Amino acid sequence: MKLNELRDNPGATKRAKRVGRGPGSGKGKTAGRGTKGQKSRSGVALNGFEGGQMPLYQRLPKRGFNKPNRKSFAVVNLGLIQKFIDAGKIDASKDINEDVLVESGLVRRKRDGVRVLAKGEFSTRAKIEVTGASRSAIAAVEQAGGSLTITSASVTG
Image 1 (cartoon, rainbow, N blue to C red):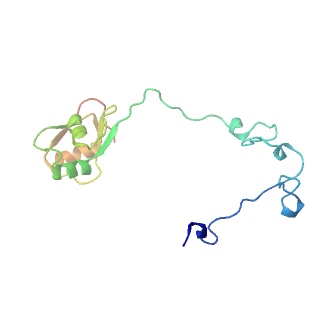
Image 2 (cartoon, rainbow, N blue to C red):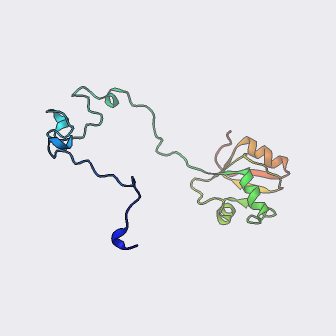
């Protein structure tokens, strides 16, 4: 086999359709654009244009609001904390706070605080101190014989 004998698999490549190259091509004269009008010209981008009528996206009312001072919490599930304790990445005999969770790699960054949710099994007796937690997460930690303390934000869930 030589370099000049290399070929692609049959059907792997397809010739480009050359429009506007005479009547024999099947795409000559108007090149498949029809006749006249804005869309037959070059440089046309008509997304959302409705022939001068007010477009639908402008006729509909605006909805919603993005709170500029909203809080963004790093969310952690109890099951993951248990997994890290079992793996020896978190020491359950010491207090587990946000800094410990960041050091262990469970949380990448604290943001406005860490919030604990109750997904997963939790069976270790541990003292956890975080910014927020769901009621079910607090109940699950207390059932395991530990305590979950909230430093600032309110309890919800």
